[in-house]
Length: 279
Ligand code: C2E
Ligand code: CA
Ligand code: CA
Ligand code: CA
Image (tube, rainbow, N blue to C red; front, top):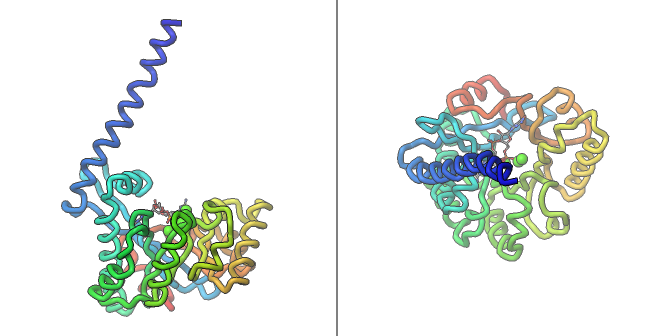
């Protein structure tokens, strides 16, 4: 038994240490990432399923680490959230997204909206709306050029505060969409209380389409729900023509996914927009 315990210790400990020191390393280098210009945005087109035009783009952050290469947000957003670094990072994302969209609009190749993901900590700030609107003004964008993606969890963390912030943003012309719809809060009652414009069906419900019976039922139900509430529906993670066909047939308005385009760096998106039909 003693032998076994020793082996177990030797088996697990290095892994745990490696994880902990990896997190520590990431936390420390994330602090300097912004100053060193290591963050980049990529943009994924959002397609109108009826016309196959580009309706908008979603900004997604990447960390181009000088040693480790491209680091995806799943590996650093939660770290940034815990440390508070998400505030300057989130602010940078908004400014940078606005700046790029201004360029594409100036070039006459894009007329849609840019969607930006908000983090829980950003959403908690009572001055979110005023800061955001000021930043849009500086970038030369109108509030209607911006869509904010929030999750059910972020709204339900403090519904009274959320309704105030969202109402202020929506009154100014910003659109709100519920990201990862169906994966979070289990009640739908909040939908009638909050000024939201669209639901984004999570990839986990799209991946089984069109073969999986449950995924077919769930996506149909979300589309019907959205329609009856007067909301637009976006499907994320569309990877195959059959998924796009099914979604279009059931009345889903918009879709994003590798089938249409992966998230693209700014230069490649510029080329994509020049080729694509835009609204
Ligand atoms: P999300 O908002 O649900 O973004 C969609 C994710 O799905 C993106 O991953 C995108 O690259 C990926 N994706 C898009 N189409 C497909 C597809 O057809 N198949 C598959 N398998 N994946 C697809 P990404 O860029 O790694 O971002 C992951 C998450 O990180 C995002 O999920 C979002 O919650 C968060 N995130 C990204 N950028 C930001 C940001 O600027 N701020 C904040 N707070 N969160 C961000
Ligand atoms: Ca999103
Ligand atoms: Ca999503
Ligand atoms: Ca998702």
